[in-house]
Image (cartoon, rainbow, N blue to C red; front, top):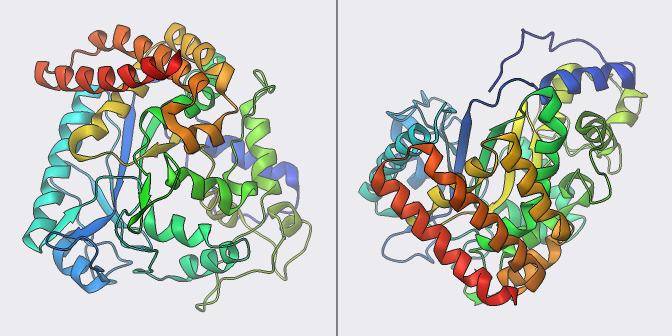
Length: 411
């Protein structure tokens, strides 16, 4: 992803226009789309009894020198051998973040090696990675608590239990794509949202939670859609057309309520309803800085989040090596401007069907039709990516399997 010059993180923000300029600089870095990255999350389970709770001490011992500092303040937090960084989410979910790579083949190869290393570390401690986007065995339970997580939990609890489900029980696949050239940004932004419902449905794995069927194809996305629409609803909406992404995201970010404000002590909670724009206008005792704004942006969780690149957040965690399939599909759909425009057109008729995609998956006929078209488009483009033969064949089988389900339900 494109980098930017060093910014003054301590500058005080006294006007919304200054904040908007900062958001534009850091969230949309345009240039040739060269890199693809991935972040993989999993729930973690006792290998003998997957319903048994796994506490932070057991995770810390298993991860050793790769433990994040949220588990062990003295940990060196070493990267895995192929560059992946391990973090742990509030419910004990493990996340592997890889550095972006200039080719899909390199990304898949290096990430797969790091997944193997992480799997071996956990296996030595009698632990195993989960296979779905929500914990199928255990109810939500905190494992890691920090001032940030404590404040998030209190804020989400005002709206019901979905926040705890999201924080403590869900896991996803996040694909990171360059924002692209300035002239292509609006199309890539639109496409990233428009293909969301059909790809969410095609790769939904989160139908069972805490020992029971939920009635949702993706109970993970159901939780995200419920917790707080001001920070989780899609930024782009059907009808926006090619509205400027920077303007849309800036308005979204400044209008979102604060979920926490960092402080010296353990209490980072804030009164409900204060937006970042309110903070700029003097709603809190001290004025915000650009560093505060950066932190606020990290507490917004829409299905597509701009972070200099486009972070695709709507995919459930996949079983085993199947995470490679949605990563390859998205890389294919965003591989060149013509394909990206075609993908946006395929997704346009169902771009507002987030609820239906999460509830019914590919059993929703309009979503199934769009998914079939997108998977066909990906299959046509994938041969250009020069993947190793075995990897290519494995991915094609995965795409075709989901396409067959979409075909059955599209009629």
